[in-house]
Length: 107
Image 1 (tube, rainbow, N blue to C red):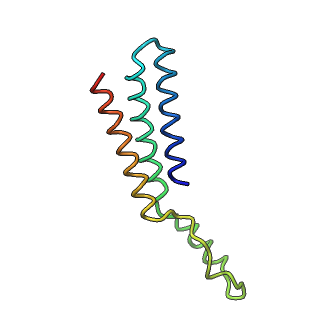
Image 2: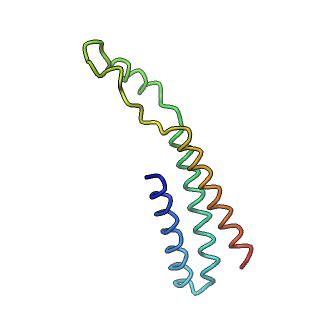
Image 3: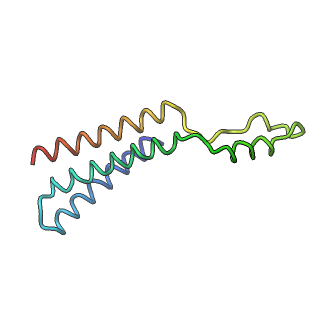
């Protein structure tokens, strides 16, 4: 699932880069490089945002909402992503930024 989302982001960056390059009548490669860098920055931002700790209010509300008479109270699913997913997102973002930078330097 994570790969599909990253692939969709990469495809969107490529389509936007080509579209903006043609619309501005400038270098398509340069605009594609810009979009790859932006997609990488957004991916890194998403990785950092999704790893932020929950607020104290949410934590207290979850503890109050749990009770011993509910059989599934212990099995509450935490919505935080796994650490490995965060590393993959961060690494993918860095690769997109590097790809955009290299492509920009080549033009």
